[in-house]
Image (cartoon, rainbow, N blue to C red; front, top):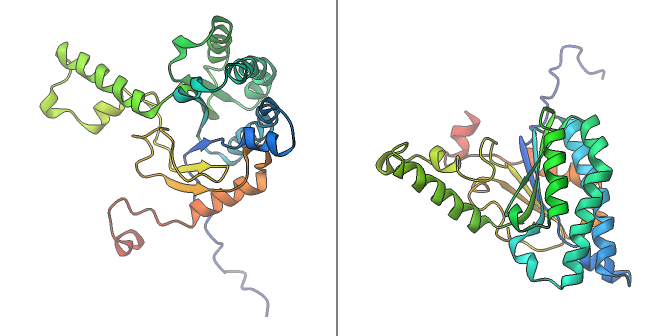
Length: 250
C-alpha cells in the first residue's frame, strides 16, 4: 500500500543548543599503540575539528571543550609542555577553518598562568573571530568548576559591596552572570569519552540539567557517527526540569 500523500512528516529530532565535551582518552589511546602520550594529544585534534564542523553544520549554537583542567598542571612536565605547544600549533593551523565556518572562539579558565606566547595567540584568535555568529566555541584551559564558582562568588560579592546588587534579592541569573560561560545557554548535552562516568570538576553549575552521554570510545577514535549517536541519545530524552512526564507531554 502506498503511503498517503497527506501523511504528516515526522518532526525534526530536537537538537541541543549547547554541547559540552570532556575529551578523555588521548594518553591511553597512544599507550595502547606503543606510542608517547603526546601522539594521542596530536591525534585528538581530528575529532576536535570534526565536532566543530558537525555542530556548525547542524546549527548547534554553542560547543564547549575541556582541553586542560586546573588539576592537569600536576601531570609530568614534558607532557604539559607538549600540550602547551600543541595549543599554539592548533590555533595557528585551525584559525582559517574557524573563520570559514563562522566560529567565534573564546577561552575560559585561569589564562593568566599560561605562558606568554600562548596568551598572545589566544588573544589574537579571540579578536579575529569576535564577529562570527554561526557557532560559539569555548575552549576550557586551566579550568576548574569549583574555581569558576568561587570566582563568581567574588564577583557577586564585589557587586554587592558597590551597591549594584542586594544579597537578599540575589537571583540565579545574577550569580550565573559571574561564571565563565556567562551569556551562553547552559549545556544541555554533556559527552565524555574514554569510559569514565564523572564530570571531573567541569562546569559544575552549568551542567545542572544536562543530559549525560558516556562512551568507552577513546577521544582520538571518536567519529562523526558516534557524535550523531550522542545527538540521537539526546533527542530521545524527555527533559522534564522537575515536571512530570505527563505535564511535559501535555
